[in-house]
Image (tube, rainbow, N blue to C red; front, side, top):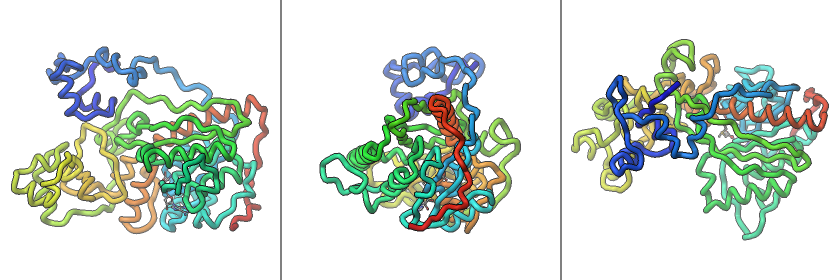
Length: 424
Ligand SMILES: C[S@@+](CC[C@H](N)C(=O)[O-])C[C@H]1O[C@@H](n2cnc3c(N)ncnc32)[C@H](O)[C@@H]1O
């Protein structure tokens, strides 16, 4: 039983910066104590009771009930990418009966790893899924986020034409799953002043789906050693009167060490693999940043040289010249491992993460291969839903479907989809 939490753990748990916690320590809102063994400044678990969102730390760990699928539930996965969401759902016991993806290399990744999956490599705009009507339990998809042209009224499906959310909703409408699950970045909450998300909710409602209040899931609470967040948008077909429960957060937070070294998450150290490097001068400068540090840890002349104009602009820019630390979860990975604003340098070596390190931080299994050039591979991994987060979400979906099938005494669906005729 964990009795003490470090400053960085509490910052992660609350989604606050360490600076905020130091301020609270000074002004008495949350005062750190000395851990008896190490004498480090830490917080007693009891002190965290004042935060409602941390209630789960004080609940008993009861095994999750009803999470073995009672039938072979079927998923249609749209915008499937390299399969982060799909593998997680598979680990939860769901069966992907078709996956759509436009990008050749991402589709190749899916085919190489799962020759049995029905991968439809095409622009979703050109595909009809009407033949799957009534044959899928779940439609999932991480549609790219685009604004609607808003007429100031409740949006209906046709108002969204031209966007990829339209395609997601169109396929849900065509196939009539019991539940649909949209996945997106946190930014969708405030996109176009919140109107994009409102529009999506109103469209799902119009096509006959009751929308569950969208939720941000933090990957660090779902066995992922990365501070990534995903917005989850769920619609339940209106004739189904069963509630959906989001996965509960886990208490254990994994760090970069857990991602890259042998331990609870992986049985071996991370395998050697290809990766990109830094140009010579960038490397010379980043050499001087300590683990967990960033540009402010450089001497002033190097700060100016590295940051150039950004040096004189406002904002913390804490992603610049950033080196990760072994003892914290990684910061969110992006589609390319060496971006100036969102640097994630390896903690000991002065280089970006390799492809396999990237994959580990997203909790892809080491056996999962990625197709295409090294930069294609980074892109596929950086775009993915972390596998372990997807698994926890999948377990919630299974629990929901178990209840639906039991309540309505539904029969197993015919999963033979070879007769599907696809193009619109
Ligand atoms: C955020 S990624 C999805 C990640 C995926 N869910 C995972 O966990 O690995 C979005 C994907 O949508 C795909 N995409 C974008 N436009 C598309 C289109 N018109 N038709 C089909 N797929 C598309 C992109 O190629 C990209 O792989």
